Amino acid sequence: MMDGMAREETRTMKSTSDRSPAVNDSRRAVVPTAPRTRAWATRLVVVGIVLSALNLRPAITSFGALLQEVRDGLGMSGSVAGLLTSVPPLCFAVFGVAAPRLARRFGPGAVVCAGMAAITAGLLIRPYVGAAGTAGFLFASALALMGIAVSNVLMPVIVKRWFPDRVGSMTGLYSMALALGTSAAAALTVPLTRALGGDWRSGLAVWAAPAAAAVLPWIPLVRDRGPAPAEQAPARAEPSPAVRITRSRTAWALAVFFGLQATAAYITMGWMAQIFRDAGVPAGTAGLLLAVTMVMGVPLAFVIPRVATRLSHQGPIVLALGVCGLAGYAGLYFAPAGGAWAWAVLLGVSNCAFPLALTLVGMRARTAAGVAQLSAFAQSTGYLISIPGPLLVGVLYQSSGGWGLPIALMTALMIPQMGVGVLAGRDRTVEDEAAR
Image 1 (tube, rainbow, N blue to C red):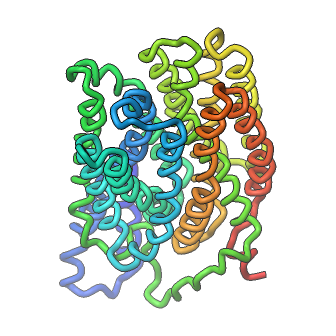
Image 2: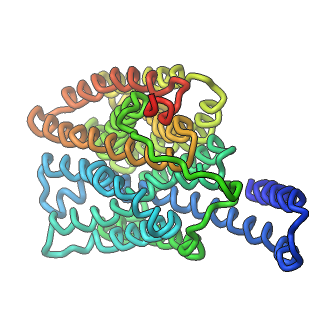
């Protein structure tokens, strides 16, 4: 894939130089090296996108896999644990809104590089807070989640900026890597904890290593604030005006859709393993079931964006994913242990609403600037919407002593998710709606 992008970039630069006969000698001397430099940068961006995506969820799913051990170690109640599962969307909403401004000032590569460094530091510090207890654990988690938040918002921007004609395939690659990292953390955290002596602190801290590796590809791009190869434009091109994003109905529909799918995803990541454990499933198997749910996104996260970009209306995909979610919740209610593997698969398919939402962000705006605004608005507003969900699940579980009411809540939220998803899937752009 990367070689193909490099060859296409070389052809693009060559054709551009051929159309400029008035180039002087000094410029001709530079032309042969420019395609190679830009092709190298394109490859580096692809590697950076993949490694970054791999590290955008282990901070959450590793905690979910060891939720019971962390609760016992820090003396948490069910309500406090529910609060901790609500911290990710809160951080994503608060810090994600600043990402476009930071990217304009420092460049998107520098911001993502800093984000990966924050994830590394947070994951390394979080398990060893000592006397600080829950408060220290929460602070260190927030540091890691801050890095995830800005990277969440800027990934669709980087895709649109560097690969405007490959939004579907690159979003699929990014989403596939994200799902792989999510499922790997869910599946491997418990076995790694046992291999490292059974201490949950070591099992959580180990995920700082891949986060540190994700810093490296972005270091050469820290000072890159110029246009990407895909953004080369005529010298007199006018900058795109800012979009009044709040005037767009599609932007609001996409924000609500993003928020409701995030609610379902973070409830799943934070609580599904505990649901299975309470039904009598062993801890290791419960972690594997969560991993199955997450790993379903690996192939589907690559396929769904590519299919979505070929459709004029993405509503049918929204409805199909929603039906899988409803079936999975029904299974959790009636036979959580008996059909555990089937429910894990169905909920994994349903959670692929996330890569679909990212694809819609890239499709519902025409320019990279519009995508930046839409991404920040949809993700920040969406994550704000998703904050109460995991917390309510914890409160309902604590007060009722069972999973009936929490599962009923999850089922009820799936209906409006399907409705606003159909609205967000209509073929229109936020620029056109804001102008009207």
